[in-house]
Structure formats: structure tokens, C-alpha cells
Image 1 (cartoon, rainbow, N blue to C red):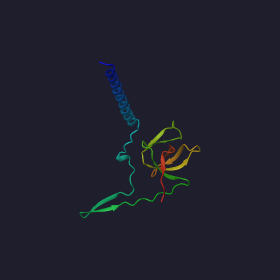
Image 2: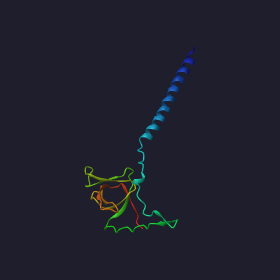
Image 3: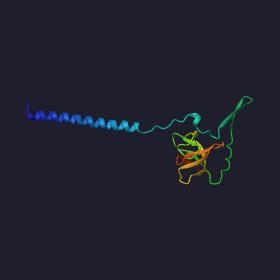
Length: 150
């Protein structure tokens, strides 16, 4: 065995270990980056906002006809109030005071509508009311998108 063959053998071993190390690091980076992303929250049928124009069917005289339920006219909003839709995938906690330590009243699901009544002076909390109810409370600001009125 001469010096050249020993050098080739050592170079091959070092190169092989380097290739395995780099490919292992790349695979690890790929899988860990996939695990670091929070998956989107599933939206179950009972959490989806109900559409206001749902087709209804009635059966009269053996015939089935399709009727539409008219969309209710939106109630007048208080001065300065506007409608928003929740854009936070986990939903929002409706709280009794503008603080993270305040009591949770309920959870407002993803894509649910709310009416923003006012915002705190520092802009961190919104006073909201849920449409169709008298439930009011505070949610963290910036987790909803304004709905443009027609």
C-alpha cells in the first residue's frame, strides 16, 4: 500500500462523512421548520357563521319548491361603530375588562362577525358587541378585518 492510496481512502471517508452530515442537516432543517409552523385551526360546522340567505324547501301538494329566506336588514350601528370579521385562526376571547387578566365571557370563533363600538386610547383593546345579541365585551385589537358596508 502506498501513500497515495491511503490519502485517497482518507479523503473518501472525509468526503462521505461530510455529504452525510450536510444532507442530515438539510433534512433536519426541513422537518424542524415544518414542525415550527402552527397548523390552522379546523373550523367545525357549528363554529361557522350562519349565512343569512339559506335556501329552504317546502313540500306542498307533492311538489317540492325552493324558497329563499330574505336577508334581514342590518340594524343601525351606533355612531362611530363598524362591523369586523375575526381573522385570528384560534378565535378571540371576549373579556369583561380590557386586560389579559380579565374574566373570559366566551370565545368568538374564526371568521365570526362583531361590531366594534369603541377602541381604548392606546389602541390595544376594542369594545365589541356580537350581532343579534346584547353580549358586549373587550377583545384584543388588531385581530379582525373591517367589513366594508354596501
